[in-house]
Image 1 (cartoon, rainbow, N blue to C red):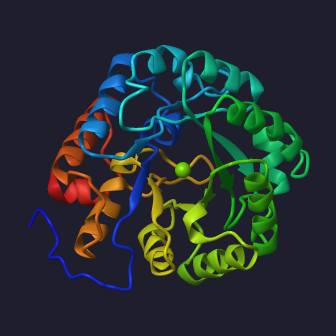
Image 2 (image 1 turned 180 degrees about the horizontal axis):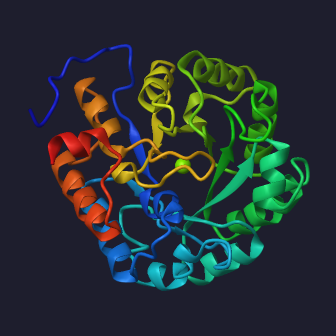
Image 3 (image 1 turned 45 degrees about the vertical axis):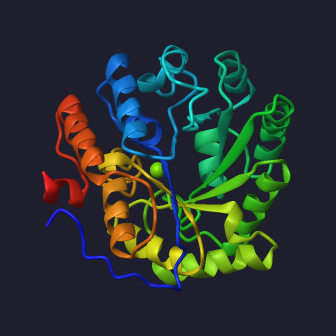
Length: 307
Ligand code: MG
C-alpha cells in the first residue's frame, strides 16, 4: 500500500497546517555541511510537495551553528514573496537585523521553559530572556514582520528533569504578550506522553491561550511523537511542526531520531481524513534524495516503508 485507508473522525479538525522545520531544525543538527545548492533544492522541493510553510534557516551566529552560516546567501536564493511563507529563526537583535536586511517577512524566536536551557542556549536567565526578546519582537512587528515564538523543554529538561506545567504556561504567555502571533510548544527531548500533552494544552486554555494560537513541536526520541500529536489533535490543535524524513537527531540524547517526521504525520492525517495539502510521494522522494546528500538513512518509518 502507498496510502492508508481513510477512516475519518468528525470530532477531529478538518484541516491541519504542517509547519516544516527540516531545513532549519533538521539540518542544524547535522554535522556534515550541506552545500548551499542542495539547501535551495531541498526547500524548493518541499514547497513543490505542498508544504504550506517551510522554516528556511536561522540567523544564528555562524560560530554556534556552522551548518547555517550561509543563511543570508540561502535566503537571497529563495522565493521570499511567493505563496509559501519561509520563516527564519532569529536568536537576537543582530539576527533580526540580518533577517530584515535579507528581506525576510516571517521570523521566529526561540525561548526556553527552563532555567538550565536558558543559561546554556540563550546565555540568559529564564526571567531575563523576555527583556532580550522584547526589542526583537517589537522591531519585527514595527517592520510588519510576523513573529512566531518557540518554547523549548516544555515536557522535560535534560538537566532539570520534569518541568512544571505552570512554568511552561508562564513562559509561553509572556512570549505571546511580547507580540508573537503563535507559540510552538516544544518537546525538545521527546519525553512527553499523551495525557501530559492534554494537561498542558488545557493549562494554556485556562490561562486564556486557545488552541488557535498554539502549535505543537514533538520529537520522536522515545517513540511518542505521533501519539502526542494525536492527543493534541483531539483537543483541536491544528498546527504541527515536523521535519521531512525525520531529519535532525537529538542533541541531548544519543538517538537517531529527533523531530517528528513529516511523512509519518502526513500518513496519520491522511488516514484520519484530515486535509493537509501535502503530496506524500513527492515528499518521500525529497527525503530519499536528501538522505543521499547526507549519506544516511532517513529516520522516518513511512519513508523507509515506501522507498
Ligand atoms: Mg525540533
